[in-house]
Length: 221
Image (cartoon, rainbow, N blue to C red; front, top):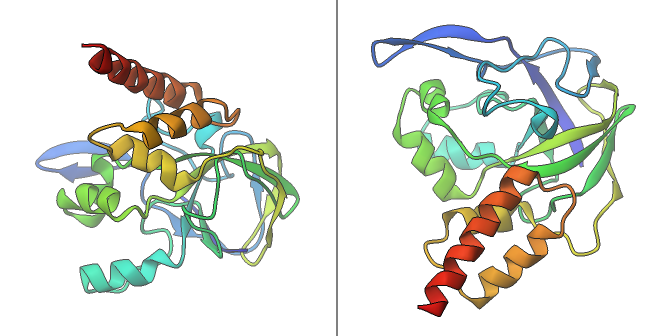
């Protein structure tokens, strides 16, 4: 499990559908080592802090293995950082990584918090509104991490697992719960497990409790 690329970028204004939009999705790989702090990497910022950034979304990780899929889907080469990720990883994916998994990377430590839910700015990056739907439908969402110990990171660093919650759920499980049209018994059991994971942000837990309540109401009528 390796960190192949570290990417950063500052918010910039672009024109989209005739309107100015400020976005931080444009990231470029950096050389050498860089400081990883509680809220972000040095030289990296987010534009809309109401939905991006913060402690629970300090760093966005995207598996390098997905680039081959998207090259085939889109018919073109893509450089690391194209999905707005900070860490392009190898050996980690949404089915193997669980919410609450802790990793040491460089001299820092991080913990996995949630999958990425795409917003319209991914469409801006790819110049296609349809990219948002395709990204979510593919299940290739990547995942966010929070920083539990600040330090320095750089390309080539190993991402060593140092902890896992005993009843943790996969990153892909959270995405599946998000896109599910109906909740049966398996989904409700999964929701209950997810609610017990300390690293899952409160906003996700509130969303899952709401869905759980709606299902219970439907079963009672």
